[in-house]
Length: 194
Image (cartoon, rainbow, N blue to C red; front, side, top):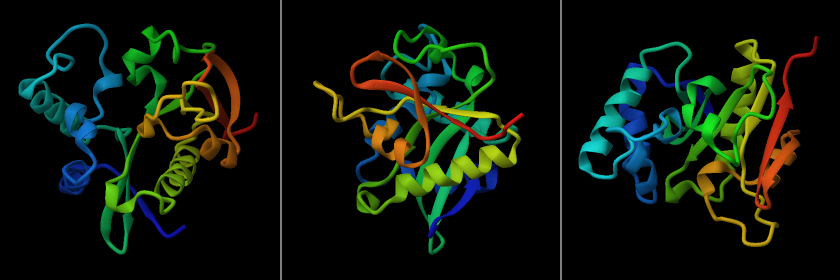
């Protein structure tokens, strides 16, 4: 793996800003990876400048907590990717989603977002972020890692690259456990065995 993976900390916040402010990351700048962490109507869900600023402040506050809200990927010392993950209960919107709602009550960590600036896409960055997330979750004692990729082979598949592709997760050993919409499987990887 050519990426160095590090948890987001307050000291690394400028690196996350560099990724989110890069060309091709306007969606990330719109929600600051808070979209799935909140549910219902509120200041973090109403589009606009106030929402973006509030989401950015909220994510920055999460960078001071344990577990961190995600991991940064660096190549040659440059921050070039982000993956948001954590305990499923940290992502309130998942519980209400008809597509991504819990499959069962087992404790899992969820991967909800990849952010890779346009200049670094199609170079395997997301795959390396995923590998780093698997290693990190395993080191934290996580039993199951879950994700909600897009199956681009399905008819009418969305092009939401921030979820990652099903093929990428298949190659990493994840297995499909549910599919509530043709193009949106739920996949899991068993990290620790009893």
